[in-house]
Length: 333
Image (cartoon, rainbow, N blue to C red; front, side, top):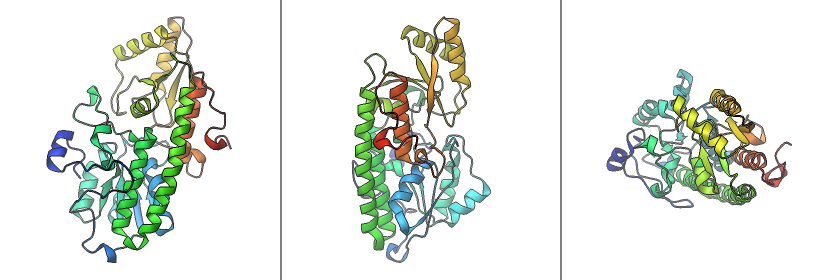
């Protein structure tokens, strides 16, 4: 999939399949499935970032081994595959990645493995383009941080189940059941996040983070989001960007701003120091998971835990009433 082309060229050349919800049919692609899927089966799946890995592993269940290339704290915007990664990708029965240019430095690698016959799917292709953001600074490309809207990410869960069912029809019922179970949990999580953010007093629902990864979060849950860096961490914050954001912080009397687990704290600290020079004290409200999840084996090392943590930390730091242990009491355990 030539996902790294400008959006308009991609749409002209490939088309963007619309899957509004559930487990619709995946897009046709000459690299996307074997000629005889009934004989194929799946043993090994390779994925990219943790958010993709978690939902693929959950949907695949016991029927495939899922290996994620990117560990906690790894920035997918900057990730370059190693020789070992390329070997794993080439030897996999199936590859899932996020797409929408999130893994921008892996574009050539995806193209090569597809040409060699390894099926590779960008799971965000499940999302109707009318639900995708195209910020002015990223003209020609969609905002890739779709997982920040739980309802949209749930659509990708259904898509994963459809692909697995197509590639491994023998276990299709299990894949769809696993997806249904996860989507039910995500629906409950989405309701919790909405409640937590709504508990923040009016006028204080302003989220300032290290880079512009929370646009979908703002759109879904009713917040204003600002950041010194753009959508990709490869962008840099200019002096004027910092000055304008500091003025915004002071004028709106913002009390807390947030660092991210996979992005340098440098710009956030600069904002705090600059605000102090204007006699306004703003603190770090906590560390959020934006482009990467927590450590494997921990609650925040799951997609549900990641989003629970983010919503709970944001709400509590900005004056909301979210419970300390978050959604269903699983945080801080």
